[in-house]
Amino acid sequence: MSIDVSPIILGIGTALPERVITNEELSARFKNDKFNSFLDVAGIRERRVIAPSQSAGDLAACAANALLDSVALDRSEIDAIIYATLTPEHRTPPTACIMQNRLGLSQHVMAFDMVQACSAFVPELATSASLLGVVGARNILAIHSDTLSQIINPMDQELVPIHGDGAVAILYQCGAAATGSQIDWFEFGVDGKQSEHIIVPEGMSRRPLRPESLVEETFENGSIRAPSQLKMNGAAVFHFVVHTIPQFIKNACATHGTSLEEYDLVLFHQANKMMVSMLYGMLKIPKEKQFYFLEKVGNMSGVTLPFMLSEALKADRIREGSRVLLCGFGAGLSWGAVSLTWQSSQCILPETTVLREQ
Image (tube, rainbow, N blue to C red; front, side, top):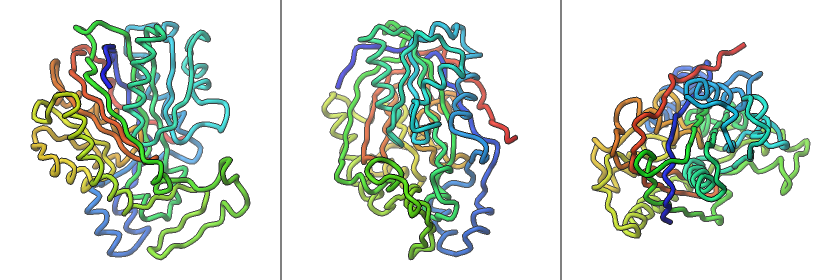
């Protein structure tokens, strides 16, 4: 779908937990050669995880406060807050409502949560652009915060080495095409038949929490997991990504009369380095248009793609006039892409805030 709104991205704030989990620590935890080979393929050396006393909301507040303290905008001027997460503070109320109070925002603000996992950034951006263009909001604060370490068993050797915790806050403002980051187009997809491949099986209304939900089971590959914890069929997800995403990107570009050669940078959700490298290779995207930022943070679910956008800006890989293609994919199984022409020359990028352990 095409869109006429051109939101200015006033700034992007990022936050990470203090605690670092190294590959050496994980090798000592899992103790098998096959696991060490998997670490090499994943391309992740370190990942950050929050302390037991902390939450995704704590990370979110770090990222948002760092951003709001850096931009020339009073907090009372924010009209909406979108909070995208797989790990909310509570089942209810929405964490966005908690953030309104915690961040000192006006009571006259729209606040709602979004549950979209790894593909969250593209629908969040589409929602933000729609609010700016249709509802008449002037300033929108969008927060992505995921702490998957809280829903992954620490002895799950398929998921622990891949995932890390993190948060991103983005401030959008309605602007003219000359000053905004022009959104060229959006495209989306979903295959609900494969939704069981990334799932927390028990703990909500379909399968309410019961004593057995907390009982750990040991699987053939040595991983340990309870029904109330995140489960992923890695082989099925890999098959989905390599058989769906390249053709999706080609079709999207063809639909909107563009080609991959016209883009200065292509950013994929970074599930692991092997998967992303295969996507770049299958689409024949040259190295100078690729970008990795997962070695020291891992896969942070829906936080990953906007975090990468911030890091690419800090590294001067995106400049005024750059064309950027971003694609997210994950639980659902869902996917989405957005084409941007970057025109926000004054985007504020505070240094990444570290949430200290207490």
